[in-house]
Length: 303
Image (cartoon, rainbow, N blue to C red):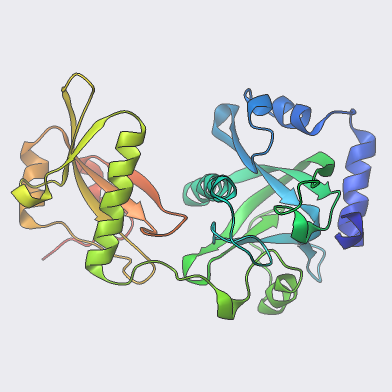
């Protein structure tokens, strides 16, 4: 609700609203390049034309530092609602999709575009009150970016304006009091902490990823072929032979076995697929060709 928004933030939102054309919340997102905006009116982030990411920034959770810079604490716990309570499956999926898009911009060192929004009900009731609707949504022409991504703390910091500035610890402590993220002592686990658990989570992620796109994925790890998964199309044509490696906050590095390194040289379809934050709601992957393995974050070449 408007009364929960910092006065300076609310004043800026009102100015944007009054200076722009009168558009519905969906029309605003559509005009920013999201062609299927009408099919996704309740999403919290979208991928627009040109691979631009657009994310909702709830005004109620925007904090203003002493120097006037705006920032926003993003919970990396997709399973729980801000302020507590378990999300429904649909809510959790929306949160996962949003986090995946924000993580994409962070990994690429890119910014994202924001729509600033206030709500008709108390922000704590946003996901639990059926009467919850957008009060005001405006396009923010200022740049936003993900300044930090801390899986072990289940927290990311989103900042408005130029890079190079981050809120102080005191700023973050004060922002947590506004809500939006779970208290530190009640934080969800940051993912698996053993090598076997990380690898199992990464394998499950990759199998689900390829099958979700309609490909056939077969786990051939036990055959010691120099890769873990064979990916083929519906007609049985082999597409990829994938080595899967997972990383997590507790286990941030990985290495290839001798068999995997040899296979990378002789097998044209060999690829390395690294799952970052394996076993968490923010798991994300990237695929590398044999010539790109050294570029994979966390890769350690064995002596």
